[in-house]
Image (cartoon, rainbow, N blue to C red; front, side, top):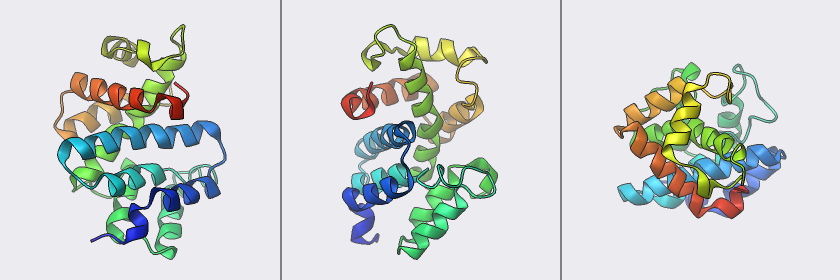
Length: 189
């Protein structure tokens, strides 16, 4: 079973803010955390552990943004700080290029929520009110078809993520929008 500090949000949040100063990267971590913890609740899993994996999935990205370094450097840092292999392997598996298989429900959930949370945030920013309360599944799907919108977000990862999780895409988008609405103040949405 996981060590207690891996379930301690404040401890993990301190690591996140030690390495990440960018407001947008912090909000991304919180958005992915919101989606992943909502799934943990739905699946009856360890909400704190799942949430902290999500919180730290990109903590090294600001300092080590290349595919040669991220998320490998983060995994090394977490290993030095005593995080177990399951925690680190899950984070490694969120990037396809690591070739670390997503074998657990948590790994599949993290992957499914990562790009989608970023995309939902981008869709929110172009709404007139800039409020997630106005974001609907249909507007997210319409923007997914627009290749010029949020160009850096992998549509393939969003589609494959929902598929790997075994959740229909529309249902997955709706679930993540609702999870992010519950944390809209923290997310600035």
